[in-house]
Image (cartoon, rainbow, N blue to C red; front, side):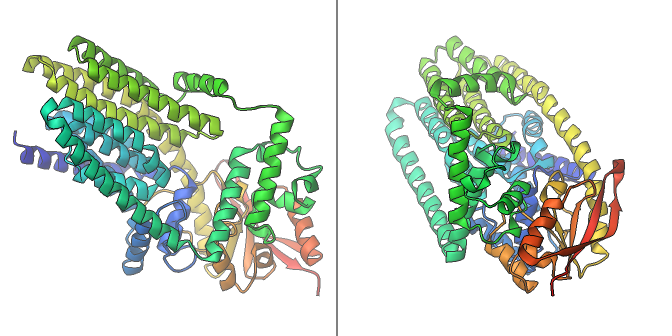
Length: 550
């Protein structure tokens, strides 16, 4: 079949599958980070669409914010994510000689991330597909656009993919006749230079858009917040409570930071947060006597690839073994060497990230996706270049697709299980949103840990009068703008303004908050004005807090 016909068959089949699954299954966000970014871009957070989505590069987030300004009722961020996955599926599927096998393989790999979305994983899919295309001999336009988009969606993922991109380029060069390798190296060098320049320009634009004093202080604060909450044991122990002043906090400030409701305390800026994070980091190292050594990190790496991230670890092992067997069978010793270099390089990346102390599932899965798709591209090319009969190649291709489908079945199973769980939780969240929507003039500030399990379904209405008391937008110009609109300085003042209600789990002990507000504003009266009962006996109390001090 001609390439054009195969391409349109892939587009048609994958479009139908994508639309049907989105309608029937209702995709969800992996974490509430995506929900917060969507609220910023759409204008649900401050009332005006804004491109400062923090973790997304501004050239992309700024465009999305403009689209929301022009046509606000269209879910642009969800459409961009879905469109990215769909484009990757089409590019992947059309590279197969059989469009049926291509579509089946694309569905097996990509669909779970269409239904259960996180911006980090979207960036990984874009970079992974680019690596696959480069290994297959892409001229550079499609792969370059995909890599640039991956960088714009999540800069760190774009940078982490560079070693794999280089490996794909080297693999492709050495597949060519010796007489053409020099010319191909020059062409790839020019392509890489253009891509690097594009990334640098985007990075400069991003830096300029965050160059104001407010955003610089926020970035310093957010980096320190990440260090404190993600790289120390601050939230998992209470040992820092007794002598909180030793760690740069008053007792009241400790209560605020430990509850993660950081918007209550305006005095902790970027410099102070960094000082607190540094002291906690040093204290944790002294107390636990744990020093992350290279040997420890290598052992943790071994445990990680053996016991974690199923089924990706199994797909990775099988794919590496298949490539090694093909190289030995066909006597492709140079390709076997490239495979060895790739595995050594990936080990360095993994060990480094483990040594740094934070290696969440979304990062490990992202690395697996990038490497597995690169390996699949290499495997396809090695089989196609091998001196085998057409029948043997077709059988080998069918076996590979079969193994991929079997392994992906477990990912599909986990995805739909998680979707069912998320949809049940979403019903509770929708009940809570329905309650808050009844009083659209009232703003509901939510205790962070009371609602931390809730993310959001995609293509859903926004909660415009609900706001977390903490999280990564604490101390940001955006949260300050929200409080300026309320004519208050911070969240604590907002709670006593009469315009705001506090929303917290009905079982939550808030005595610390009463003490904190009293220390700042004098005695307060708490009125439990309502209770929102949800499924499974869970519920939220709605408080009105009044100052008793004239």
